[in-house]
Length: 315
Image (cartoon, rainbow, N blue to C red; front, side):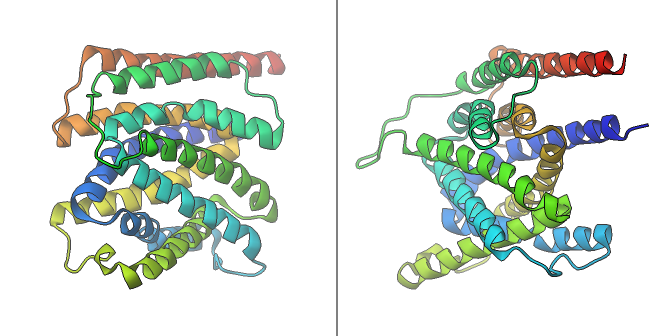
């Protein structure tokens, strides 16, 4: 019996967990970058925090050093660069926007991922993708838009700069997701090794940038230990959002592709609003509940169509 159905089920479970961790990351990143720490510093350390955990997992799973030769340094550098740019665009975009407004923008991730994958791979999309993508984007917008409040622009502020940076972040992430599998998986790199090496490369690149900026702007570096709540949020977005979530994401992409995997990440705005309500004082409305149901309905419809296609092939 093929292990593909079991692998797909594991991929789906991992992607749902990823959506939860990324949803939690949105309000926490906003809180960290606006109340506690410099956004460049947050972008850097969130990739370095999970490095020991990912190293241990890769060592246990492969029983070999993840840094063993041969190492495609050029490709790792480019993947790390895309992750570092993504992290900067994501963190600063959320800081300049608002958690819920950011969730609205990121609800377009299925469309962005589909277009990027189509351009890069020229492969047909999964059957039922577009109806599911439309349902996911509309549902995610319903989840988030009900909580958006008008905000006056600050003097000198560029309108919608934060939202524009989030769109750039989605493009960069889709590019990374495709290239990580195209470049490293054929070389025998497992998903744990891919996640460790690319995250480490991205984190070190941002750390280098922070070090350069700190020469003329020392205030970017913390001068004392942050508050306990800030440390807790850093550990959560580091170990969860930038560690386990990326590992689960890479595994899911290797199984079902970037466009379909991104549909599951459309649940992130639902989790973002729930976390905002539980820990940051936001409220949940019936409109947001309806949006969450619409997202799940779109995903389940596409999954059912995939099951029907598989059964027809077996018969």
